[in-house]
Image 1 (cartoon, rainbow, N blue to C red):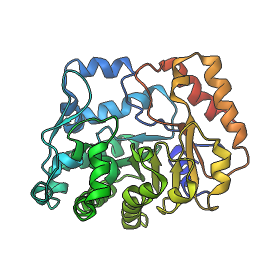
Image 2 (image 1 turned 90 degrees about the horizontal axis):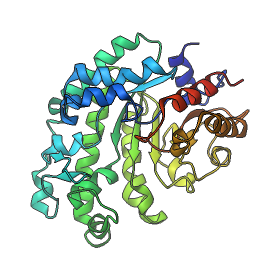
Image 3 (image 1 turned 90 degrees about the vertical axis):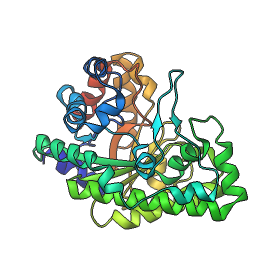
Image 4 (image 1 turned 180 degrees about the vertical axis):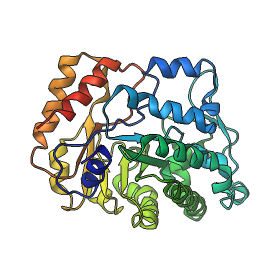
Length: 341
């Protein structure tokens, strides 16, 4: 079987000859060719120019024998398409043009032109699909409604997510009104990606872990389930919620085919606690890629041996790849998984 077939069989918890591997945020700043390209183009230019997004998506695939590519984009294209642009201030972090605070702010958000405004992503996907030629899987993605809402309500990057949490706890009707709009936009966006040819989609719930278990179930998992229900018949769905791997029952309630697992949980324990038809993705600590090749191989083998004999394992990091990752270490990681028997 080729890499694409291996990846899709693992998503469906079918036996494969070895775990497939892809790297979250694989086109990140750890590659010198990416930094060279960015010297001449802004982040928005790369995201919104299909030829540049193709180039950045393909860069890691030229170096590493991974089984899947993930389109180069950003989760905040959704609020931007709804009428809330974003940028990157010089001091770092993310800044929205304004914060969502009132009913009028929510009412001003539009979902009916999401496909039109994000058509550049569909064009990028078609170019990447053609380049992959059926040999590797293509993954589309979106941020989760809760994660998108945190940026939209806070108006910027946040350490404590106070405004978003307060809206959830104190003004549930307005919170739900916002979440319905975001969820509708995400469904439309992912369906557009599916039409453009993706083999699977991932929902990134970067900030689910800041919520208590009950709040997570209501403020995040509930809305992710609506998205999964809307697209699961078309492609496999991976849900990754950072910091929530200790609650596999709530994660499984989303209906996802595969649950992403961060590095502070033993992967085999999560796999055994899930239904047989739900797979896992993970879960190497990303900082390992900033050490040395021997450490990378040792820690990768530790996870592979822990998961030996268990179906439905897609090898990945426990979160996104860091800018300080050494390409030699990434190659050793991929080679270790590819050669594992």
